[in-house]
Length: 198
Image 1: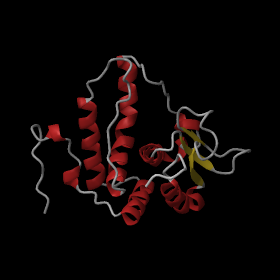
Image 2: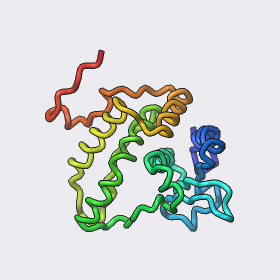
Image 3: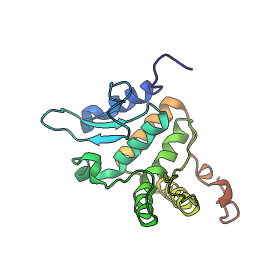
């Protein structure tokens, strides 16, 4: 339901912060609500420092999917990377070369796979994004297949510990189901025989 607040994510912010502020000293922050929309065009992870008591996952535009995506990066980063700004990852915005795009997609597979699980748990639509529109590289088929394969692996094997906690929190709060049969793209039906779900 629309409100006057440009960010529709207060519930997910509260859920994350209730779960992880004390245990991981980490806050989820919306740049819109925090008055930083003008200074932040891209999301950012900011580790705790002498002038910041908590680690902060800052999502830029107040969108639910953006919040889930940035949380997904945090879940796969690991303890050492959580001490580095943006987890120490290289990032080049839209307009990447083919080689740069390959590097980008390599680090996006696991976060987007987790984001898919989180989206299902919270009853949100998930859209995989290779995020390189202006470069004219529009064939994301292999990338999407890698994301769906990784999502199925996460669901049937061990999730990162923070991801497992967050997935359970979202399922409890939003009532979404996360089933293996949901983790296939429509165009995978031709290429893969889906396992029977019993």
